[in-house]
Length: 628
Image 1: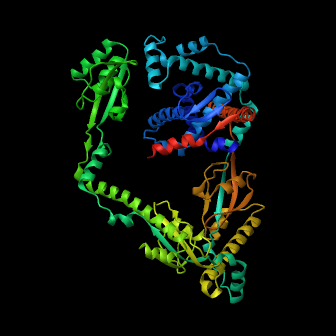
Image 2: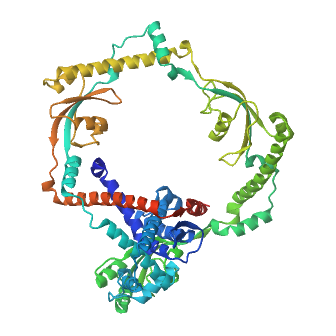
């Protein structure tokens, strides 16, 4: 924890942002997991009363994608969100809240309905222009969420119960001052060094190995000169494209497919929109009048609200609130709307530019549709042939005879290694799946007919296996010679570095020694523990070693060019007393880290006490379906 707190400050920020995003779902989506009347397949069942379903996950996922996409400025797909760990985090947070709710029920913690109602009425998201609870906003939110008022009240009761458990367990957790100060000193100390690299290439007197030396090197490093295992095999591979020539697609079928998929070939109109939302009709009217009178939209908004318009960016019609979408998409470029009302106030929208929608004609995509239909039918034909091949092999036919009968192409492979190359090192252009099939098949009988990742089928029969063997010295003599010389150069360079350190142990001028050797001394910039200064030769390993030394002491390290002699030249202690703001921020980060650890331990303890049924395949199906 200590080094990561300084080294990965940006990671802390990214993590905090991600936690904030997930936590923000508490209001917009995840609260309603406490609703007992759920729909869809359960992902989680906890205790007697808690369920988290596909419906809950789908709703929260959509909300999460909207928020993350807005913040990142790019469209985040469900697959990207899942790869980032967001989908898993949604389920984990639901599980944690479910555990807290169940534990609260077990402890007999009750939350009156009136407390939930008071919480809702005090939520600033539901406040109107006067700052008071606005029922219209609340009802609009419920419609968007797809819940009744009673369901939402129950969800808030569940969250308040869970919060009571969490607050009682955590209390006011703070990071101890001595710990924070120690972490600050550890992470903020900097050091400087001078470094001399002795390149192995600078060693020109390594000599040339005689036959005895080469023989010994070859024997001592035999694994390095092994030829890989080679296999001889017969391979049959069939793909849908192999059967396309036997498929006929009519123009009527292409037309019908085009009509069915027309939306796929259409690009919706996109508008670059900015808006302002006010609560006073007179203000909205004045903004519209000023724009029509010649002011820019930004100037008109600034004059009436002392603020700037909100950029919605380039949006399609379905991305706008339904209350204003039709009006906005009826405007011309650089047009401004009349005041438009929604539960959130009075909108005035300005269309900065328009990118017209378009639809590809049948002629544009005729070839693409013909090919997709043909491939689809070819896949059916391939499946039929696969079944026939399976029957032939099951009936005792040899691979060659079955292939001949079904008119399938067979590929004879004399030798192939696990990387797909032959004995001469030539790539045989087989897919990795096909190569893996050959190397997972026992010699003798054909393999099962296997579906490969590229949509093809393959069956292999291994006819011979050549075990790995050390190549004779005369075949690899040049390589052995080069390896021997390189090792000798490194040995001599390392000895030179060691001798230099011994010479300078009692003091001396490292720069003068570098000059005498015809080398260049590098001076590092101040660097932090574990980071170093790679531009000047201080890699993380050398940096860690230098942080164990006193000024003037030396250490020996390694680099890609050769051994390195490094001398510590300076220490810049951390000064927490002059960085109060940094210390405060660090205290908050340490407290967050401690709180996260404590919470996780508490959740793990609850799992041991409260029954949890979890089926991750349910949410994974939704992610997969979104990719189709």
